[in-house]
Amino acid sequence: MKIFLVDDSVVFLQRLKRMLADVKEIQVIGETGNAYQAPDMILKQKPDVVILDIHLLNGSGIDVLQSLKKAKPAPAVIVLTNYPYPQYRQKCLEAGADFFFVKSTEFEQVVPALKQLIQRARNSVARPLTE
Image (cartoon, rainbow, N blue to C red; front, side, top):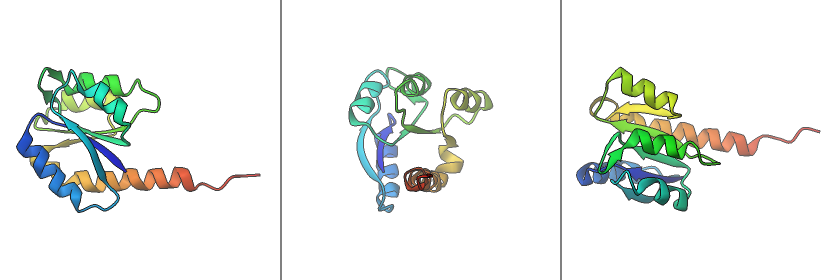
């Protein structure tokens, strides 16, 4: 599964990449911290999943999310942020986020979420044809 990371913290990106390196089915194919550049970079790389922060350089991750979900096919999006406020969670889920996690308390939930997305992709491919 191809993953694109969007976060403006280099330290956090390194931590996230170390965690993802332990999952053999995952390949990080790109990263940026710039909200303005993110949609074009992501759409060119065509990842299966985007891990996205809300607070970014030059803009909002929510705007990036809304832009990505207009693409066909749209990648799955995991919002991973330091902003645990219910209104952000609601806005992200309404905009099409597949998951919303808080960095400080739910960081470890990212890998299980990715494994769920991997399984979902396998199930959609492996469905038998009906006659």
